Image (cartoon, rainbow over all chains, first blue to last red; front, side):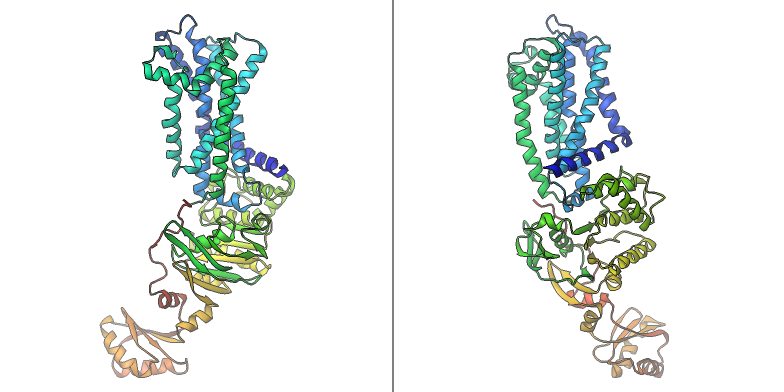
Length: 254
Length: 317
């Protein structure tokens, strides 16, 4: 167990040292979410009726969940690269704790996700967002976001180990997760969608996570969504972490 | 190792391999792409579980004692497995810490290795700026971080320029002199010839011959006289002229005629006499022992560096 913690920290450190040396990734964490926030706020925002609440109040909790769900894509890219470059072979030949390569990778994502959240929230506040709840709720919101990001990192870890190329690892994310985040309450109220999409948005875990964030940050009615969101996140972790670790044990280079 | 077998779906990568390596020696696994060399190394380095058979390294079973065994082995692969976004020193320090050393111990050891592998000046640069040879040296250094008694080198010089190759060979020889046991895979005959104390020739997942370089060459036959003709058109005449002195069949390839002989004594003079009597122009005559190329050709019926027949590195499905 001590080995697992030490090795995980070593791998997390490795991934964080790398980051500033990959400016294109750093941009993906910072500039890209800012760009989307501004586009939605000023391009689409005026045309979307959110029933009395200013759109910026509606948008920020949604876009922050969407962005954080994608935060783990570097894990998919990085692990896929490690497999092909033979680095996973090296790690697997070392006397280190087996899950540490994945645990360290996903732990590093938590740090980058935290950076993304701060950038996004600051941008949000500049364009008119304000928290309407107490300090504890706001902090709980940050915590929930980090948890959501962590769970999705494991999904991306699995995708990165399964995919044959970094490109296909990334496209799995975009083909599966992108539509999921849009057919939810993240950007527009589902009530405006056609019936089948509205039904889907209602059961979509993203709707539950976004509604939970709205409850925690803007005081919108929660309908148990906060606990529902936590349950979903834990569910995703419980399924994908063991899947990814099992896959890692069998991973082969080349 | 005893009866090691491993299949990937329908592809039988290893079909019952028996091998032994004495401590402090180099075993060269020689074979073309797809022969099963890499699979064998991956099984021994605990990266793959064999379907059947057993193997022990320094007395530890590769399956049952895998965790303990990983402390005793170093692996340097075909793909120089270093993190391109870390510096040379950061790479070595990371590996050292993953072997269980403290950060400062790992750094000291990392600096030592950088010095040994002539990478001190570039130790602070990210490895994406390294040349191919530098990366291989760093990869080998990473395999040596924990001073393992057993080293697996999977085609360590594939793709390197001649100067880097020779440099790496000297390094490997140095390690062996210090008592390291090395299992080396290669598709280069000169590499096996130079580094390996004992050679196992592998083809289609099976060991088809084993012995020292000399023993293998003896199996193909003794000495041969090689005559380079001035004109390739004279080859049939030369073959006819040389037949009386030959121990077996005289063959020719382009302008070169090869004559198997019983011993070296007097054969050069005799060959020249016979050829000048039949008025065949000679460019060069020499006696040589068979090369590992000849060995490979006679053992497998095909040359050593043929294009791959089966993809060696199948993803474990």
